[in-house]
Length: 157
Length: 166
Image (cartoon, rainbow over all chains, first blue to last red; front, side, top):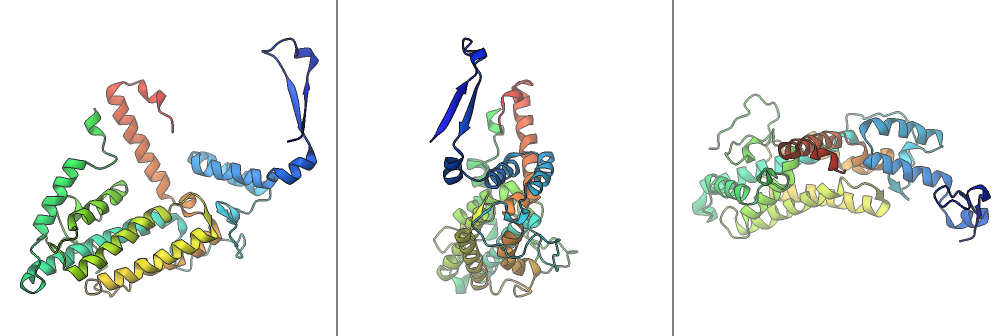
């Protein structure tokens, strides 16, 4: 990497106050470093990922000032032909409710499984299964007790 | 043990069983318990024909496996085109697996909005970016996590919360 380091003579003798200026060769920067917009994009993504709720709003506004379209954010190399238009859901699921979809589908799957086990047990002569819902419940209680949930650290206290 | 409970819910596909282990409270189960619970149920079902027949077991395990994979794929921090393609393929497989495994157990024959909406996930990612960055769930989760750690640490030493780094 080509760069020039200039040490300020006023501070050269004092290592604590040493002050220098680093000037990167513009030709090198153009060919080898991410563009200004790309760096701002990376900064925005870092803020969205790790920042608090209060920091995300201002970061979005700043990103728009830097010429970043919000639709381009958090997607690498994805073609986004729709542009930055106002939100219209047309009765569909907004992305800010995606967690409700996943958790909700998990509950549906659990419910269908339970129904299936119950039906099997009621027709056990035909299905050949022996497990009832009470047995499933007992196994789950024991698993929960033995393993505990991943987030449950109350046993540390 | 297993009585229909949600009598006033208008959605015939809503979960309606009651258990002591928590699986019955599927309407109110905390979001952070969903992945552990799905894993535990899958382990409980096992590969023997205790709860399910051999044909049912294979299909049901496939549904759980894809659903758990989607838990990660839907919440990625950043997507590329190949990520979106893979996600949509898994969603398609998940819906087909559900229809195959539970075809006699959905009162509406899978004709409810939640089952369909996920097919537009690629639209949302291309339109608004990564789902996890716009999903309001993350704020709820983070808030609960912060409260949880604060209470856990605070019980030992009121000052120790200063050393927590997130």
